[in-house]
Length: 422
Ligand SMILES: [Fe+2]
Ligand SMILES: [Fe+2]
Ligand SMILES: [Fe+2]
Ligand SMILES: [Fe+2]
Image (cartoon, rainbow, N blue to C red; front, side):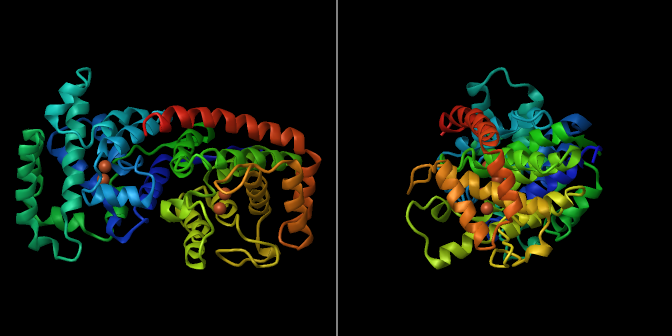
């Protein structure tokens, strides 16, 4: 297959934005509603297209640095004692991708009132200060909405609460313009509409652009970091799975677009873990059956998140079915051998091999013998595909050298951009 993978920028950003709010019912539509309010205030302020787009991208993913459901909920209910942490982490992640980097400043300061901006960084441009102030207000408003009360019965209270932000040092012009945009019922009804996401997609607030593989990969890598950087034990897991899956793919004559797809599937195979709390995901001891059931949701969510991205249909399957097993004993779809695509079977083998070669809180990293023992056992039990394991075994040294190289580079980045920030 010679042609290359392309993906629409808006598809990629919208689907991950929606995914970020799946962690808890209290968070549903938080990112998208915040993005809507931001775009309305930006329009009233007459920000130009570029500034509005930068703000919209920041708002769509503004809490990306609050990586676990616990941290997201804490930020949402005003119990995050150090909100600057998720701002700085989010800004740092944004700086990794060309298409996100221009919005990083806005993420950095989205919980900082105007007065403190100047103390903190005098080099900030006026437009970035204003944009982060708009995001501050939009995020604050969304968190104050009572989800069980009709929206038009709470507009007065919400407007008064936005006026109180002046005492917290929020830019007065932003509050004034919010008054303007919120003066009609249509604004409020749109804000809580079930079709807000679809409506915003149709309004083309993001330029319609198809990213090539390299540009898409740099954004996908940010989402991969958001998934893996929650724990030092998994910090380089998806990078390893992607490298291993690429190596097996090459050994099985994958070329061009198929190699790009298997790489993307490896990078995003665990993105569904966004819905799993740290208390379970990072638990150092054995899981109860109820906790295991919570973990087992993640491939379903991986599939659901990725299948909303046009052009990612194969990637969604290959990533979302990585826990399916040939004998039907896997999850979440209980597929059988003939129903599972070769790409998904390759990601499954790469996932097992990489996981065993990594350390966990309860065990040391497995060596080659441990990896091969586990894979051959699964092959003889009829759960993983023997010809894929054979391709890995035949090329073990070269594939694993590549896995370790990529993981080492990522580990250094994790230490630099996550542990340093906190
Ligand atoms: Fe936030
Ligand atoms: Fe937020
Ligand atoms: Fe997984
Ligand atoms: Fe995994």
